Image (cartoon, rainbow, N blue to C red; front, side, top):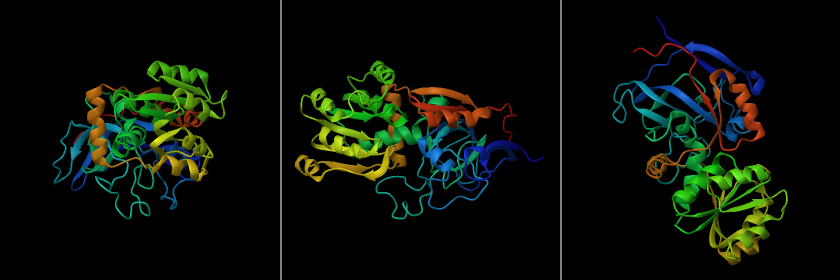
Length: 350
């Protein structure tokens, strides 16, 4: 008898077209894992995919969204050597980027989880063993599910490309998943962190997490002036740029000589507007960040265990409440939104 599972899928773009379907359970092929998904987390990217605003080539419908997941291997296909049933795993976003420079065709034909490849908002998923990453042992699956995109993006910006050193100054913009992951990672590695936000309440929550500098941009729209004061006029060694548009002008002003701006988000605009002179005089680096590769993800997971980092989760929703979770995402969470996947279906039996 064919075993069945439930998954969320789109009949066409738009949150109103997201529905639960019952479909046959997939079987792992050569070098593949069948993973029972325990939890997924949402990224702003998932909302863009849902609305048909991100991918240049639209995926075939019906399409299952969401990039981040954590779960348990329940079956393996022939030839698997990296994992065994019972192992806890998560998935690497760029499925073909394992280490080193990104494959030449990744930008044109990126095979990323949750678009254009099928996503994780489902009870079971098949992953190639090379895509899977061992989960940190110190975290729950709900916490692990927050790592693949947001935390790895922050890690890749600060550590893999930025070579963050103890005592350096880091500035993060906002209080979403990437920003708070950057805050936590930078603190764990001995950096000083300043957070900018329009919300005083969220700034105080960031302070409770360890931020030593706070800038309320609703009170100080020209926030780079206050940033200069907080840094004693020396500037910041690393800036996680999540706003985009003309906000980069202020990031350039707030940067230390030889510092790095990691271009990650474009909440304000996808266009970059900034003056050339500050970048030239400061010998600044602007580094585009698009998540990261599997080896860096392995490094991140080990660091999470070593430093006992606990990701910030705003709220955990039930599997049946996925639409409500996406509405929360649009409002803007403090940290991450997670969906716990446990619909009461019988456990998979090989």
